[in-house]
Length: 307
Ligand SMILES: [Zn+2]
Ligand SMILES: [Zn+2]
Image (cartoon, rainbow, N blue to C red; front, side):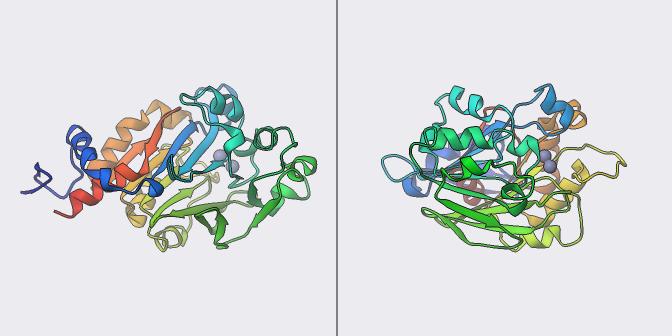
């Protein structure tokens, strides 16, 4: 048994959720400039889920830093409905304040609203600003980023395998090994103020995937988990494979998102708690509109581990 900040924990497992709320108070020593949050504007994955909007598909809105200091905002994978989800969020995510838009790959559930988000970021093209990060096949060939819209954005980072770092203000972004997913697909590692948040987008499980992400030692790992348990030969992780990934990468905090029908039937939140018990890591299942407070979650886990 051990204690920290007046709280008592009996094992190496993360503190129970109620006690964790109290622990947050102790993490206020974090510098404001180092704060990171991720708002989930969509957590749906499979075609059926997205087509019916059983879960939304607006991607993730990263915020690095906090007022009154500098804030860098990056919208990742703006799928169908992203603009509506962003502007109707409370408090709203303001596209005109975006610093970058990033695509892991060009599939529609990740890129359906990319052009409308570019127009919103650049105020209809009147104010050229920001950066675009996407694989080459999103810009060229049969592009999902319209060339006219791309011209509104002065900085283009064409993503390649294990490339970077790409700087967006004081955020540094590196890409992962290439995913096995039909079109060019890369994960992204966002580093800011000593904290790394890694995003593992869609793709088939293969040897080397875990090692590649583990090498970045992410504090937070966001994983797309489309399937529950099946023997389909498709380019997406199952829940069992996600468990293997999370255990192997061993972040302080893991988040599952991008759910298909079978995952939703199994109640992702219940599965997250099951993984949390099994692995001794903090595990969340993202929900539409939910904001992950990276700074306090990582601090809470670090505080527990330090005792
Ligand atoms: Zn895809
Ligand atoms: Zn997808």
